[in-house]
Image (cartoon, chains in turn green, yellow):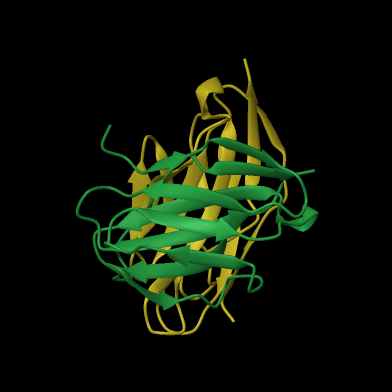
Length: 115
Length: 115
């Protein structure tokens, strides 16, 4: 389909392992966002890309979190040395531009469980 | 900082009942306001939006009016269906650190509609 695609849908990892989560935005969308959604909560902003430039990473919880979008399309969120508090659903969203009226289109998310 | 407050759920209704889910916000400037819906096992879908004061967003029988004087954006539907059972998130577009628009979400309200 033409929507935002995320993989894997589910990821289980042991504490201390590194994980990588992938996001394929809608083709041609300039803006890409990552959000973290804890159980029973609303999504919280992690980081934002405009094309390949990471313009804001103020929401990343620690330096164990790293995101990239090297060619301005696919993005990867990497978490190093995972901890139990990293367990959450990670959502990716894209929009054609970054204007205030631009709705963001979300993927189905990756549910990450850290054992 | 910017924030969104939603009524706690779950909201339990019988089919064809009237629905109201309250949402109030705190923001600097003039944000756009959104309602997103999350069906079980799926990602967030935009339900409706309003970009300025007194605007009414509407979609699939749902409506919400941007009330600047009361800083509210309550979601309403005249007659709910079982298929409306989902989690509803109110959100605003707030300024990120570099001037882009990131979404700030409420905690979500679960709606359960019984036949």
